[in-house]
Amino acid sequence: MFRRLLVILLVCTACGAAPAESPAAAPKITLGFSAWPGWFPWQVAQEQGLFEKNGVSVELKYFDSYTDSLNALATGTIDANSQTLNDTLASVAGGAKQSIVLVNDNSTGNDQIIAAPEIKTLADLRGKTVAAEQGTVDHYLLLLALKKAGLTEADVKFTPMLTDAAAAAFVAGQVDAVGAFAPFTSTALERQGSTAVATSADFPGAIPDHLVVTRDLLAKDEKAVQGLVDTWFDTIEWIQANRPAAVDIMAKRGGVTPAEYETYDKGTTIFTLDQNRAAFTGELEGQAKLISEFLVSTGLVDAAPPLEGLFEPKFVEAVQP
Image (tube, rainbow, N blue to C red; front, top):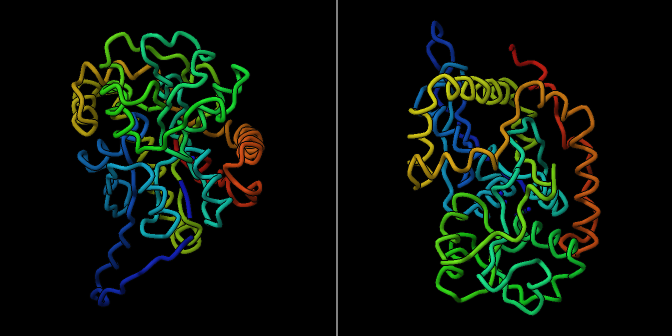
């Protein structure tokens, strides 16, 4: 939903040679994802056998903590992960070698700063206690929102907490506001009278979400990466043709009802193949430069991350419509 950071080590276990008459089994790729509507389609892909259809062997690993998924990719514990541009840049700034090969979506409202009833505007956050997952995308959204209101983080009492814990603390009245992403926004809004004083819809294009892979995986198995990208578009097509069944799968993974899941629809804009291709022609690099400047100016990273090799468009270019 930074949605956090570190360096790569990949352990391969060699299997016994396959019989001469049989092709060797495809190496298994570990793909991470966590609680975000734009990433739940991976659950659909697994349950509908779409990875296998595209010739890629995938261990799909769900992370209750988004930060843990970021660290797993940065340390090479997994091969690929679903994460934001912000967090990928933070990881790369910290030394991780990663490449973005797909745009899943843009957050268009499902990241929110939710405040207690007495807080009506961003300016009202001055002096208030605000919780968010430090160094991740909703911390970034908070900083953007504060800047819009002429404030800085020093003007609030920032309390770093994991997103699920932050939402629960807000409902319990332990903090005055919270930065959260769906489905945890639903939890936060259970506090009577609470409202969103800022959302990602207020900052168009600021929070794109991606499939990110280690450079190690790119170097040794481009076919598997292509299989992941092809699977994504097959999955989106399957969801469009089987919406009720797909929503049931994704809602179950998110721990919400299908009706609740449908409320997230407008807040997450899934990118089409054409939108993916267009984004890789310069839009993403431009946004990365803006985010990098912001990360440095706010002290979230020490220096702007190198962008060379960060964006790899050839996989979306190779997808057959």
